[in-house]
Amino acid sequence: MNEQENTRLVMQAYDKFKQGDIPGLMNLMSDDIEWILDRSENVPFSGARHGKAEVGQFFSELDQSQQPLQFEPQEFIAQGDKVVALGHYSWKVKQTDQVFESDWAEVFTVRDGKIARFREYADTAAGDRAYRAS
Image 1 (cartoon, rainbow, N blue to C red):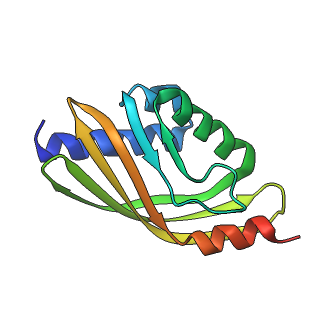
Image 2: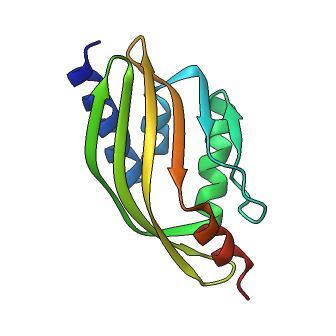
């Protein structure tokens, strides 16, 4: 796949996520996907996941923990097998009723027409504070 096709795949993944079509999103991933967020002490779904089963668990935990208020990929940059998406999100933590937001960068690696790796860079301190608030 070329850079344009890789970018279209990542944009399709975001569309599926925003529509709540997690099975459709999972179909865009390789069986051995790596899914990495920085580990945060109070955020239950943070850390690294490997394989579709663990990534599916990530989305289940995310849905149980947070409500999306805003999720906007704003810019895409592709080179080789990498696609970087820049955006902004706002979430409400269900347990604490606290809202947090962050700009983010998410790096995707595409292999054989599937998303093989995901790595998010965001303000983990903001999320951690929202989970700790009482």
